[in-house]
Image (tube, rainbow, N blue to C red; front, side, top):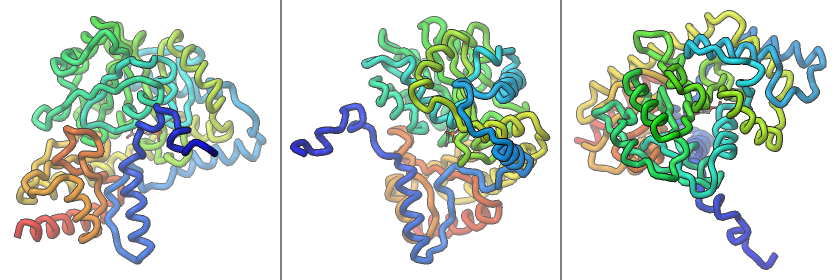
Length: 398
Ligand SMILES: Cc1ncc(COP(=O)(O)O)c(C=O)c1O
């Protein structure tokens, strides 16, 4: 070929980086292959098996021969269950036939939403620090992510003034992740109200990623959603999924909920991408939502215990500050007092002490000076990790 692959690669792809989290994942794998013992705080993936009744429902569907294309939107029983879940999560009734699409993970929901609504040159507001997918998906759709810096002192919430000052004539969408990744912080109802006012006033779409909404340690059972607020169901695309709540990340299953009109645009993209999600696994997902929810309570209970170990442990280490996480399974401690960049510190912890974290800078400029700890590993590993971290940081100071 006369042209290099670099030259052949589309501009929108060239500018998008590979995931910084995956890079840590690969480094850990290489260390383990050499026999090193590593604390797995690098990836937000529950350590539980998928509950048995869910696996059985998918296996039974496969046995029955549910092996052909499903409707583009998803099988009816699952869409009905998602509509009911949305009512429980947000208090808003949605039409399962017109407002729900089963996606191959929340990730597909995000990409499809960007392709459906973001034109070249459009701006998409994302919190900084944040999970990088919104930025990359917006760029792959030809748009431009505009980062809104957040502050630990404000629990990393999207402060309305900071959002308002970045809205231009090209702003199309505001992305909200609550509970958040990498911070574990949750947008309050009051803050969501102010963001909803901004969205209505400036005619913005809102992508509400609430994949961690049931992994919440607040007073209510479920973290609040902007979809619940007046005038928001018509401009909000909810993204949610099974990976975290039901420990089904390898199944690749999620969903979008949006107005019938927005759903039509999402559906058009879906028809030309994955067409539909694997049919038999959708039956497992329907069982996840319709079946006994004790498994969710148990897993969230285990995350709550781990959270306490991590929060108490971090608070007990000299020089570490923490905006207390109230959702998901992430903590985002401030490590600036150790005099290293987040990348240097993450590297030191991994190479010299076998503790895998992700440097805060991977999540945006405002993430610098922090580390992401994903406490989705076992309770015992969390305890061992805190002991190891205390020793590593004490040695660094010493
Ligand atoms: C905020 C957020 N949304 C979505 C996802 C991905 O979800 P899924 O596995 O359903 O694609 C993740 C995974 O880490 C996440 O942190």
